[in-house]
Every structure is written in C-alpha cells, then in structure tokens.
Image (cartoon, rainbow, N blue to C red; front, side, top):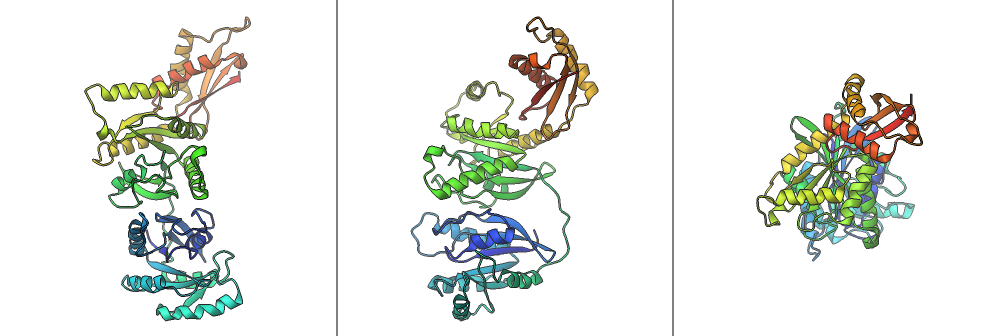
Length: 433
C-alpha cells in the first residue's frame, strides 16, 4: 500500500474520532474510556484528489498493568513502521502530558514525517493553549477539533503534500469474513494466514472489538479477509463497547461474500453458532464451517466422520455447508479452509445456462412430478436462473401457488446434485407460465 497515515498518541486524546472524520464513517468505536481501540484499524480517505489509507491505533502507554498494554504498544509500533506519515495526536483540554513527551521520543527514532495534531481545540481559548506543545520539539502544531472538523482542512492540505498523486488502479476484491463466538481462534487464524501479528490475541474473550480488513493473496486470487469481534448472545452483552463491536461484526457479515464460521471443537455446535450461521444464511452469503482446535480432540479413525454427521444433524436441512477440521496453532488445514472459501465464492457467482437447466432438471421432474393438490395437476414446463447476486432459479408452471415446501426442497436437492453449489444458499421461485 502507498500513501499511508498512522494516527497515534496516548489513550483518550481523540484518535478514533479523527479517524472517523477522515474516512467519513463511524468505523472505529469511540467511547470516553481509555483503551477502546486495540487492533490497528484501516480505512481510506481522499483530500483534493489525493487518496490515502488511514490507520487508527490504540493508546500508547507504558507501565500499565492492563493485560493488553504490551500488545497495544506492539500494534502501534507496527502501524508506525507501515506508515508514510504519522499524525501524533495530543489533547489540548488536558495539556502537555509526560506520556506525550515519552512518545515524542519514540516517534523521533522512526524518521518519518510527523504532524503534531492538538485535538479538542474547539474554542479560541483552547487554540491559544496549543502553544505549550511546541516544547515537544516536533515542529508546527496543528490545532483541530476532530469532533466538529475545525482545523482539519489546513492539516490535510499539508498532509497530502507528502503523498504521490499517481492514482493506483482500483479493484473490487471478494470479501471473506471470519465470524464466530468469542475466543474460538478467529484472530489467530488471520495472524497465521498473514504470518504476522496483525490482530491482538489473548485468552480473554472480547479481545477483538472492531472489524479489521486485510488484503490477502492465495491460490492466484486476491481478496479481503475481515476479522470480527466475537458474537455473544444479546443477554450476555453488557458493555456499550461490546454492543457496538457485535453490530460491526454483523455488518461485516452483511458486507461479505463468504463467511467462515469458526467453531471451537471442544465445545461443538452451540445455539449461538447456529444463530451466526442463520445470520449468514439470512443475508444469502456463502458459508464455510471451520472447526478449530481439532488438535485438542482425542481421535480415532472415525472421529471426524462422527463429528461431521452430528454437525449436519444439527444443521439439517442446511447440510450444503462444507466443514473443515483445523488447528490454527499447528496451521493444520488452515489453507484448505481458505481454498474452500474461494471455491464457495466461485459457486456463488456460477451461472447455469437455461438449456442445461431444462435438459437436466425436467427429466428429474418427470420422474418425480409435484403432487397434485385439490384435484389440480401441476406441470413445470420451464426453468431458468435469474440474474441475481446469489443463485436464484425460477420454475414456470401452471399452478405455482400449489408447490409446497417439501417439493421445493426436492428441487433444490436436484440442483445441488447436478450442479456444484456447495456452501451457497439457493433460492427457488415459482411463476405462472
């Protein structure tokens, strides 16, 4: 990536608010509580025709006993290393802080262009107070208010002077989201695929709060991998921050093409897993089930088959979803999971010609015609795939309203039997000829 800006600083100075303003969305969670942002969070922005990537980071602190403090520091350092330009955010409301001075020393060693941004300068008095930040020796101070946008135009005018104005070709990539309950190994899976600590991983549920994107290249294809927060039952979501995290995870499902639903092999398929799968089905997404922590299960030659049969029994009638048994720790079958997700994406885009559909399916319908109802004999005469985003098949017949659910399932099974639609929900509609 070219033209990258990292927003850094101590906790609670308004980094995420500034990030949201630059990317013109509310992608980053904002709360009056330090430590809300933990992982690096990426978005895109543009100013005067110059596009750039923005990275939001967690608050950089030293000496805290918080379990995440060291991991957040590492994430900030990686963001600084990735960036071309750094926005060092300080808080005008609280004034110059010892942590600001310590962090200024860290930034000097990066040898990157640093813009000292004095946030919360939303009154004339506060703007005059920004002078004390010159003591940091970081050059010009840019007073802004990330909340209402004042001063950000002048900052961006200077910022984009550091960037290339050559436009890179834009390309839409398929989106694969990694979803599941908390602490099943979603972030570890992403990190194993990328071979880097892109997302913070601990044994504490709820570590990931935002949904984070990463461009990934595998099997001759590029696509976006989205790590999401663990989705718990509503009754167990007690904090505002976790509530917004879950909303972001659900939005990631809506925005994705394929969802990899991660299960904990030691706990099996729980009610909340079924709810997550239902969400993906409701939005007509491709689905792959990844059973993680398979290395913790005592196995014999038939264990995987029994486990898969039990899962399909719980999933019935939605037994079209592929199931992969993995161990992220040992990287066992993690690449097979991605390969299967790509196959599901290709299945989702597949178009079957009308002539092929009629040649194959009309023979099956003739062998097992729809049952008559109220003395009415139903005759299906013609089938076509509609030009929709997900596979939808229209059956033209004389009495469409008399087609019942069991026969709909028969037709769906015949489509799956003759054409490869593994992992993809299929919709059938009936219209009068």
